[in-house]
Amino acid sequence: MWISKQTVKSTELPLIQTGKVTMSGQNGVEAVSTSPQRNIEMYSPYGYYYSMPTGNNMLIARCDGNSVSMGVLMEDESLKTGEIKIVSQSGGYIYLKNDGSVVINGLIIDSKGAVRNGSKE
Image 1 (cartoon, helix red, strand yellow):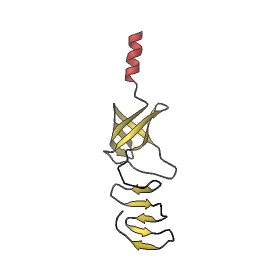
Image 2: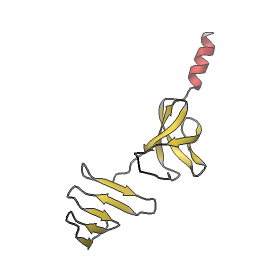
Image 3: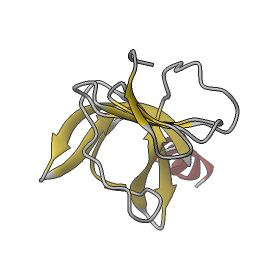
Image 4: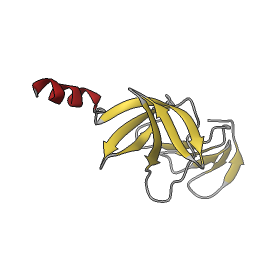
C-alpha cells in the first residue's frame, strides 16, 4: 500500500515549473518541461492577445487539472522602473516611457503630442 502511494506521488507534475515552447499556433501551445505538455491554456491581462513563439522559456502552472501559461521569461530590456515595452518577434515595438512619451518603432510622440523621428530605443 505504501509503495503504491509513493508511485502515484512521483508521477504527479509539480504545481509550477518551467518549460520550453515546442509548438505554438491555432492548434494550441505545447511545451517540454518535466514531461511534454499539450493544449496549454494561455492567460494574459484583458485586451492582450499574442501567439507565443517556439523556443521561449515559459512558466507553466497546474490549475484545475489543466496546464496554464503564466508567461515567458523576460529578456533584459534595461527599462526604468514603471516603464512598459511591448515587442513583437520581428522587432516592432511600442515603448511607454516615464516622461510621458511613447516610442513606436523609433518614432517619438512626446507627452504634449508632438511627433519627431528618433533612434531606436
